[in-house]
Length: 213
Image (cartoon, rainbow, N blue to C red):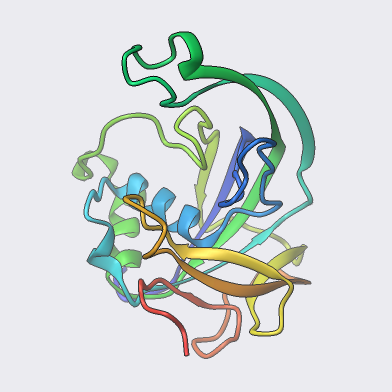
């Protein structure tokens, strides 16, 4: 059925959602930014052109708060251009925060993106994609994607656009530099999960590379 909202339940055992300005100590966001959710959805349907679904809307919530752990890992960097990547001082140990037990309920408002997701759910052979399906870094593989989950009146922690909110997250990331990255203010609020938001609900997040006025 086309021209309808799509809902997903997504679980990720381990992921790192590094804050945009984290350098020495790699902090993680407590909830995936909209740009990360959008990238995950594009990967799910095998879409490589990021701008193709501008204007589409998503809404999502955590089912529970994931646990935060700290790991020591080797980070690659370009410090000495004479050395290959990851060799000598082109690598160093850094502490990184990771989330474990991430569970998300995601809604995609009816439109072209929702239609492509319906195809992916009903007929995966018609979707041309490659590589692992990740949330965050490429190593952070998704465990489950369940279409139209039965949430049975559970409550969750919704990410809600709010100009007065205390959480700043990217809606669009400029991967070439940082100048084109679009940030938006949000708040997190607990509410029921089992119904998709109405078309004008404040919880919908518009995917765009334009500054929200």
